[in-house]
Image (cartoon, rainbow, N blue to C red):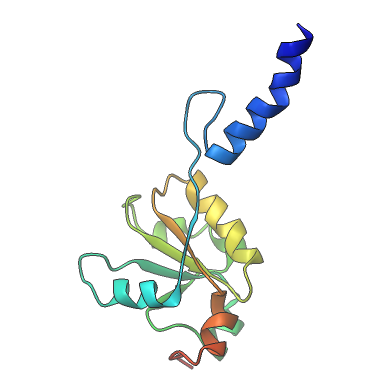
Length: 135
């Protein structure tokens, strides 16, 4: 019995790291994408993602990535219908530095979105790399 109890923490660690669940369902994972991948996707009509800026409307007005729509992370659940019904649509999420995007990504996954991506570097990284910004 002692041996099997020692294995429980390892089993839980494995399940967490592998994305497996003890209930038999797999956990979804947000996939990071870089700026070049996002730009490539935006140029392909077949793979064009929904680009979701989850900063405040004031931050969005000060500057945002071309093609982005703005739904503040704290309004996402209330405004989910604005994203649409296609839960297979790729959604790329960003905020200023990553914290709010992580919260929004978790909500999107909980709502059943299958393809949720996080823009590496968020808006700060976009600006630092001198990418195009809409003001």
